Image 1 (cartoon, rainbow, N blue to C red):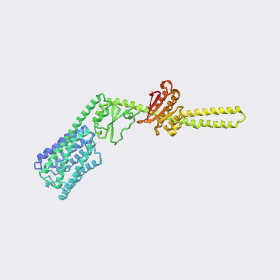
Image 2: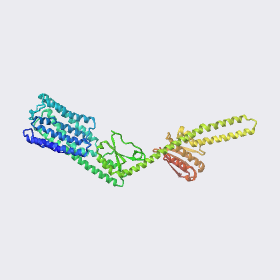
Image 3: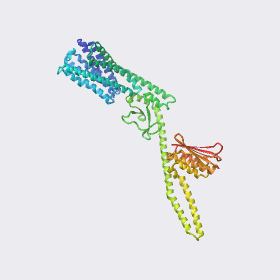
Image 4: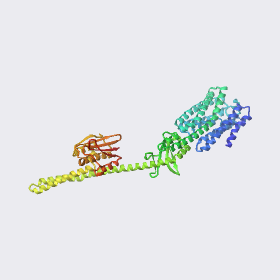
Length: 567
């Protein structure tokens, strides 16, 4: 700060001590004003955000501007120092504007524009000084003038002005892209700076056009004065934007605290945080210590964004332990103070929601375990059915054939023939019971041909007339088909045993992501799952697939068994 104060006094002292220079009053006023405003504001920004290069760039603009004031001195060596860095403040200014507010150039286009600005104000300008006679403009002698060729110098100055005009016109494109990507809170910071920068760019464009076309006089002088005023206003525009940002942060946090204190704070936490940070796409992830991972609001495991994604995660901690992660737009990465304040204000509510998310994660884990258990049970049923069909059932069939062959060979022994006939009859009965057992474990037709064919088989084998009103008409998930099949099978078994019915109907249809199965009869009604009818076990089976069972008396008599199975 002390060095900055001394540097700002240099153009003031030199302008007052050398009244024969061009526009000494202009230099005496705007020399220190521009320098001190950039240095003071830059040091403040650098102190507040030492990790952000923006404050350093602002400070560099101020110092180089003050050093360029040495060009008003008549001493050739001092004049040369000021003249060499005379254009550099504008390159630093372009760099500052293109890097605002992060302090970094975010893309190749920005880096190219800034690189072009540095080339024009250093390399090309130093080449111009080798040919330029400064005394023709009432400046001190240029000790770097090695060739003294005004034509080449004028040509290079025109080239510098044209390329500078190109670089200046690239800056609005960069600022517009940054504006489009900015959040609402960032735009409050950008607005005053961009307004001042737009005015400055317009005035610089006019100045460069004047250099190219050779316009001189009052118009050029007025444009120069207006450009200096706009240049001096940029640091104060930055301060104004910073104040608006701090006020908007305070307002956002106060609104957030008020919303969290309302009755619906749990329901609106994400929306409240999104409003506070100005990011409608904000999401929340919650840390589950038992699983060592983050889950979303539904309890499903979710990974944090990867580096260089358009979304960034900021972890909210409580006493050094992670509570949640706020996933927000990458443009908010530089608003860590705001995000930290918002996270601190919402820590308690986030902890409550984290507990809810952890509970939902455990429920989801139990669902997964239950789903795996159901799949394993179905696979085991299929294995038993195959073993019975391919093993014991085939052996019994072979034995029945051999008994019939033995019976055919016994012709004179009536007692032996009768004994073989009885054995064959018992074997046929055992074989039929084994088939029924295999179908009860898992019907092969369900695996091979699906629910429609399996329901047709049940209706055909039922001891009473069964009308099949509707079927899904397509294959469904295996667990859903199995559950629907056993609902119909158990319901028809109960109808045959207890309902004293003469007719039954079966209906199975898809309805909004579920299969609805209904079995109705015209029997005596009054079915009670608690009396060992098998319906209680059926309800347990449905619970394993998140289904539910309803048993009700039908209008006009009879019972309706209704199951809804989601898939």
